Image 1 (cartoon, rainbow, N blue to C red):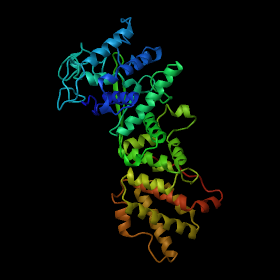
Image 2 (cartoon, helix red, strand yellow):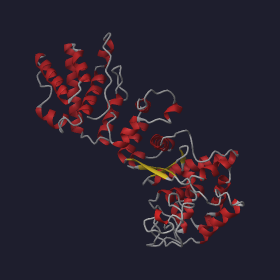
Image 3 (cartoon, one colour):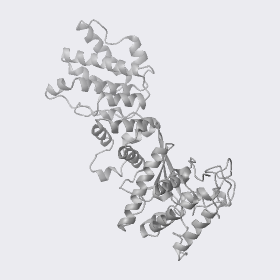
Image 4 (cartoon, one colour):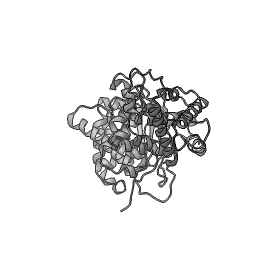
Length: 440
């Protein structure tokens, strides 16, 4: 049996294909033209509602549903979809379609059928100066189902795309569930929307929802994800791309499956300045999420101002190895040295050493605290040094001053964990100065 659909790598086309796959409960390679009449009627029932039509103005301007000059919208939409369906040809080895690359095109497509492809009148929008973009009829047909895959950000839309077919399938299932609930209730609310208005926050929310909602072996996926934040509205089309790396995806999977998942939520909440309510943080930047996306450290968010920790050493270690790409030997050295520091602070009953680490504002000042702890270790008559030269230069600070704050934060995390009972027993400790987040 010939195949008509395949994973293309084009986010608009792939979203539509996976919506069709879930609507029909078939693998994408098994879908035939004969299967597609009922899905057309399904999306037509949605798109003709006021709310969906309002969404479509920013997705397919001037298509049969959104063009105000077209009166019999149902008839024109069915005619358009029928023309595309009649032009179906199976996948070939090569072709001029920029999405599948395995079929020839009949005529270039414009923004009323494919978002962000300009209009036929604005030929200078296209690199080749042509009146449209090269999409075949099959890929164009699939894109018409893409709105069911979208997340509404209130004015713009988030289109999720991932090389993981499992992620695509699961999110398409969520979109189909949303659409069917609207059809059954008769209450049409448009594209999936539960209040998030920032693309980065919504992307993390979606991935966490995908991971939690379905029992899958997500740790084996090793998948990345991208969010295409776009509007195709009128004279102001726009596109922003947010990339979530595979290592961050794997870390999210780990913390969601870990028994300390609730602790991770506390870390995330600390990424909002002056956190007030759930509805508010859906609309505000989260520094934890932003740092994960930009490859910046989030270790300071595992520390509380009352000298307690959020999470556990196991979660922090997984973050350091998977996301920060820190070698196990280096992590174990930091842990060993921190444990020795904790022992010295207990035996000397000298919390000032801890305070000095907290207030260290440069690489040199932190090394100065280390030197004092080395002296304390000697006065205690310890049989082994606090740390060796190799441990200092190769494990703790292999790049010199670069990244010294991150190492300080890891040490503080371990000290707070090991010294928890000791610090709790202390009375009237001075307040912890806020640890700066910017990398020096």
